[in-house]
Image 1 (cartoon, rainbow, N blue to C red):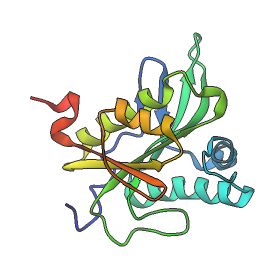
Image 2 (cartoon, rainbow, N blue to C red):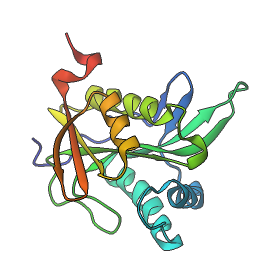
Image 3 (cartoon, one colour):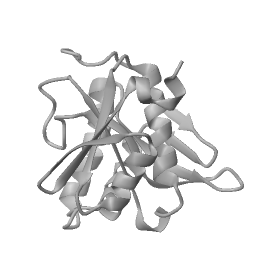
Length: 187
């Protein structure tokens, strides 16, 4: 466990997979991130414009403060053109819009995508690539994630990424993957 922030600027600012490019957010695209956050949200109530903007600012701020965070996830077409569809990446567990962490004990995987991109395996591909990058960049024992109990598709993504469910309380399910269980790190 860490008592101080993870090392700065060791997490990649760009990750490519067979179908996706994930890259650190840019300050000149915060309106796009706010719109995507509103569209991709799987909360019971849609995000307001203000909440979408707060999340976009949080994405940018986490990178500025800690040198890692959520990556903008884009699909590559046949010509190599990238179309943004959501995000995948990490934050400190107790960080959220309008609140910076007070402890640095754990990081949490998060992802979301616009409805038109769902059902194609992009979330699993993006989350898996982000997990590989995190385990490569950081000396963490494991990574956590969570989703609402009424979001079985998100839980399925986490399970496909090799995470195991560790707790279900109220309306939240919590997952974790240990470094030793991550397939790309078994020795």
